[in-house]
Length: 228
Image (cartoon, rainbow, N blue to C red):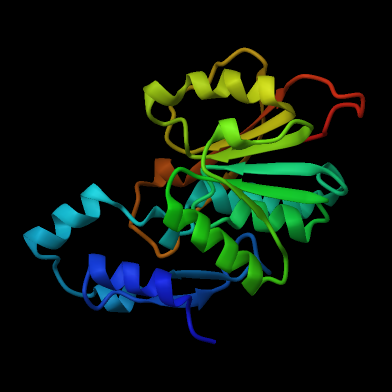
């Protein structure tokens, strides 16, 4: 199967020679994604290419370690999402949302400010035989969210207020983070820790590969708390 033409063209325009390949990351296992093929990047980038990557980084072409761990967590506990509405915020490749759909979620919404990430999430969902809705920001989300998932989106201190907003939007929140030294937002508690290596491998520090999951209890919608 050929990768989505628009995504492949965008990546090749950013870095000539870069391409996508179909990958099944471990974990979570069983989820197929179009990801950056590292063999197409086996050369030093020019200054112009480096600038272009920094200006518009193709985060969607990686399966980040925190997303892998969170996706595996959902697949290991399908009762937490079965029949529910789940949001994958900062979805990137869409791995968390796709895992939720495969675990039996009734509706999955992938949310990302990058239009290419939304295209990637939709293409990857189709690759796995599931469907996801798309949203460009939190304001586009509907009511009645049972579970909001967010992986590696709070490492910038400016983004920390999002953690409180998540609790206002959903009955429950699962945050996966590998870059915050401490996460002490009221309403959250640590529930698990796992090993997550970004794919393709970026050679990140061992400390970044340790992913912590935090469960937040949000508003109630008459269906009871979504378990972690």
